[in-house]
Image 1 (tube, one colour):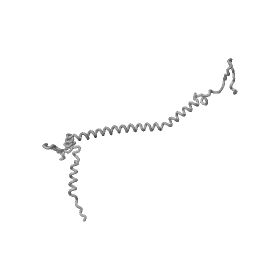
Image 2 (cartoon, helix red, strand yellow):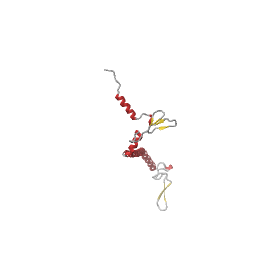
Image 3 (cartoon, rainbow, N blue to C red):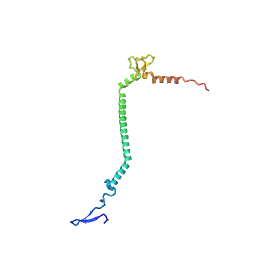
Image 4 (tube, rainbow, N blue to C red):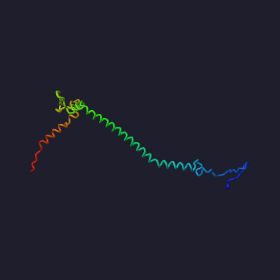
Length: 166
């Protein structure tokens, strides 16, 4: 026994220590804060686990974001494919082809009379061209049409510039 411990026995003959300065075995070290060494070790282990899984959680959330983006892109591409397939099916319809030939190329059915409206500047107002308030045209009719470029290209190829180098 140490100096501080006083041994007494009560009437039942059991030994009981009073006035000891010793703490129970679970509370060593940080007694006045109410923390035990086990609680300190548990807290350190929790912090260590948190530090170890934080990068993995960052990667997880980044991949979830990428997955959401890819899902949205896939849905958009699916819609685009459906629209293109629908347009392809329309080209199988002879009435649609006829309508497109009339509007885009200016074709007429035999027996019909075709008319072209000429604007103030002398250019033909065609499909997609619009008149603004001043009567000027806006739209595709202002630029030269592809067939006009093709005819000009054929004329240029038909009469090449002669070179004088022999």
